[in-house]
Amino acid sequence: MSTIVLETFLIDHLSARAPGSADPVEVARAFQAATQPDNPDREAWHRHLSAVRRTALKLADEGRVEVLRKGKPVAATQARGVIRLRLAVGDGA
Image (cartoon, rainbow, N blue to C red; front, side, top):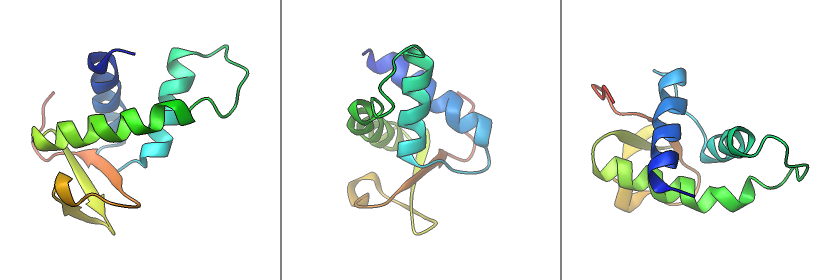
């Protein structure tokens, strides 16, 4: 899987929910459905979850995505446990 493809998908997915946020699991499921719609394995999205989180943290470091913990923005280096993602304020990507 191309990192650029996942980055673009993640930004587009979050843009569609702006100003709201999305769970990385939701993003992984949507990515799986978009890239392999004919895959009968309903749990195939698990393969994408780590990549979604890594990509989100990279985009957070670039200032394009915000990582939320308990509803508040946190630094990507402090993103542990349950997180949500949203487009960074002013990101026009």
